[in-house]
Amino acid sequence: MRARQVCMFLLLALVWGGAFVPLAAEDSEQLERVHRILRKVPLIDGHNDLPWQLRARVDGRLDRLDVSDDTATHDTLQTDLARLRAGGVGGQFWSVYVPVELAGAQAVVAVVEQIDLVRRMVARHPDDLELALTAKDVRRTHKRGRIACLIGVEGGHCIDNSLAVLRQLYVLGARYMTLTHSSNTDWADACSDEPTHDGLTDFGREVVREMNRVGMLVDLSHVSPKTMHDALDASAAPVFFSHSSARTNTGHVRNVPDDVLRRLQRNGGLVMVTFVPPFISDAVLAHYAEEKGQLGRLSVLHPGHTSKQNELMEAWFERNPRPRASVEQVADHIVHIVAMAGIDHVGLGSDFDGMRDPPIGLEDVSGFPNLLAQLLERGFSERDVQKIAGLNVLRVMQEVERVAGVLQAQRPPSEELLEAAARD
Image (tube, rainbow, N blue to C red; front, side, top):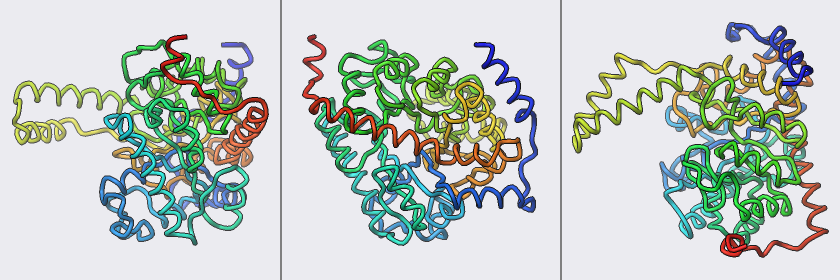
């Protein structure tokens, strides 16, 4: 670590570190400051899985689960319009997630259906939601008092190795794509799979270049560290992590190592810090590992006897209750990323409705002000909080858009094929 970074880290540790008592509801001063900030600057969340919940629960039939009615959603979902408003959310990247078990043409169909679901949800609630395709759209929508809705594709398997599909997803409104999900694609290694490509293949680098050319953010959540570095090498525009945290704080493979964080300064990108408990708490991560081991053990001891396995797991949970993560731990990850990469390179990427047992103080989308108030309490300035809430991701979006304009003037759409790249 360079001397200047060491000094910065120590200074931040002194100013922002230490243990903090959660902000009490009656301690309204910091929350009032947060709400004033969010009237000026849109809070933009990098990742929310509500669209998949709507698909899984009601087959995408929006008439069967009304997200404008918090009494209908409060006990089953972490997101609805009332709580988005209470949380001061001004912009939301809706994840159009597709499981890796859906491959090839099935994945393409599913991701288009998910984009359609988001667009139908927006059209159904015009007083609250508005589709946004650019940073300028987000700012305008926020000024109009609506929530700007952006679309992010979670998993590069959704393009079925086709740059033409990638381009058409952009036309349909997708503004980022996560290069992998939990499994490797044919051109990129995921962090949670055995590496087969040593990062990006030649075709994978072409995917990154074509994303740069069309103006789609390159999302490095879920990819291996080598893929992160390869994408940083290949990208002409800032990259970002839609929902990841700091690996130094919590050693989950989904988190970002310090050497990658330091490269974000040169690249101009950012990490949208996630709230997923095993990504922000070592205690929760360890418990998840123990739980997985216990499930495996019971499946061997009682094969085919699901009811017996469930009974024994319930007893195990009584003896080993799950620990809870906290809003303070999320703030700790932000502090570390600021120390490594700088205040201009961090944002928020909750993963609400994609996690269980959310952190205390961040139980649903209404909790964002608690986190920002925690940062103010630790000594972050209002300008710092504005950057973390939304200005940083708006800057990245604007730069991605600018680079796309330059590249489109320089070269036509790529006609590269996976097979041809492999032969070369």
